[in-house]
Amino acid sequence: MKRGFTLIELLLALTLFGIVVSFLYGTLGELKLSNELLLKKDEQLVEREKFIEVLNRDIFEAQGFKVENRNSGNMVLHLQTKNSLYNSNFVYTKWFLNLENNILVRGESPEVFTLPVPNERLHFVRFDEVLRDVERFQVFDSKKKDGVIISIKDLNTSEIFAVEIMKLILPSVAGSDSNATEVNTTSESNETNGTQS
Image (cartoon, rainbow, N blue to C red; front, side, top):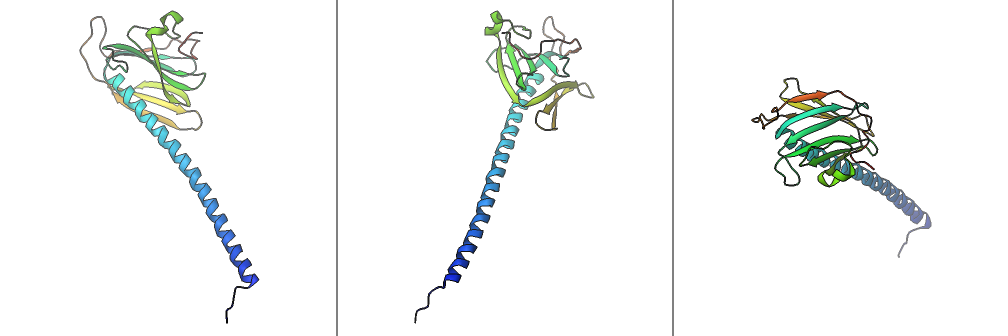
């Protein structure tokens, strides 16, 4: 004689199945969220690695640099370097924080340039966005004066990212003092971006 499932057994099985499915659905949602967070963190690490690589080459191949303090506590790093992203032999670069959108920017030109760049000079300067969501950008001499320490404060967290980069000692360029670290503490009021409207 065949015996089938009773109505109570079927309801119990469906209830247990619903509990298991809801548990799996919640776990899947948490897994998706953690995956998104890990991908975002991975993108930040890749972005920082690229930043460190370019800045390291800029400073390592620099024949002169100076640090300019801005009245917001941020700094502008001025470099004369052989490291060019655009195939020039010798370039002038400026690393600065664009306060309008909290992006760390690297400006490069074969000629000396000032910030903000006048409209008639914009075709000589190329700007690259290096890091996003930066609240503060600061540059300090290392303890032994053989390198610099770059400090970056993240906008959305209290994290401070710092890296020490060593300088290369190169022979002097005609008319310049090799590896001269000059700290200029003059404040400039226009620090929001590198271009003029």
